[in-house]
Length: 428
Ligand code: PMP
Image (cartoon, rainbow, N blue to C red; front, top):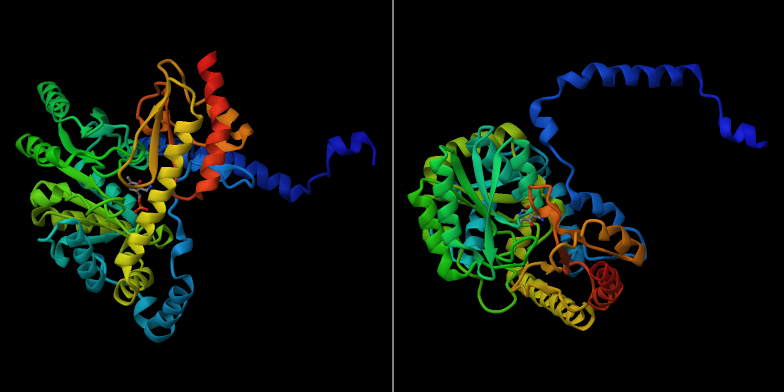
């Protein structure tokens, strides 16, 4: 074969050329049909890096994936098979829009383990992961231009949801004890003086994604009171609360106030994210709208997956499984903290989480971590640059490291690979 024929490539059949042309003209004709909202729906930087981080040989400190290997997979397989063969007519059928009563009752038990003792099954709406609960809450409460308050930094998936609904996102800074109440108060006053319509505060009080910071118990009630007095709801996102390394879980903000807080929970971190089951505990007076909006999106949450989770909660020691996860994540977190202390260049600092999946590293002012990602990948390690977790396009001198999915030895190796990349950025 000559070079020329290689360059030209095989000749396409006429039908293929025709199909390509038709697709191109359709794309052109449909361009004007997109909603304004569609232009606001962004690709998550975390999802971008997700594919790269699967490459063999790379140490991925990027994805906050739970470590599923410790689940009783064989027994779960038997459970799933039994549910389909013996209860298939229910499991494979449509179900109630709010989710099964059995699972909602069990969810109340899980929330009681965290300190919410007054939840009733009828107050729970089961959703396709807590991501879907965030979407429903934004849909129900926010018009374009309304304000949502978030802590800085915050979960990228929530930011993407808010932006898709064309909401104005306003940030409030945290310190080592979480969201700072005085800054929240000042921000609310400023925005309300401008005539802004603030709908809710979205907050991750336990082991914030991405920073790992925990809102101190002393501040929880205070923050709920500030919001309640200003007639703003609190959207409390708590997927990691049970994964506190030492001691009992901290009482959620919802434990102190059943009227102003919508609480969101998830099986993604305490069981398995692939089942896509989360929930919202909604104050009674808001329930109907919330439930109808959820039903309008999914009709009903997946019945089979709910039944698998119910069987798991009924037949297995889920509390012991959570203890297994806690010990495992604590070991990995410690491995990361030790490796950072050993290898990181001077001038860097990082958070020391009490639970969850993430450590947040701060580089000296003026260093932008985004361009460092490419170099880190070349060095064989992946992280998420801090800019992914803010709604502005400002460069960030932070980066997120996730320890949940990586064994301790690989964590140490990942940090060893990362250190020279960061050192070089500081030296410049
Ligand atoms: N909230 C936070 C803070 C998260 O970190 C995540 C997942 N990374 C979610 C919500 C989404 O969870 P789910 O799988 O339940 O949709």
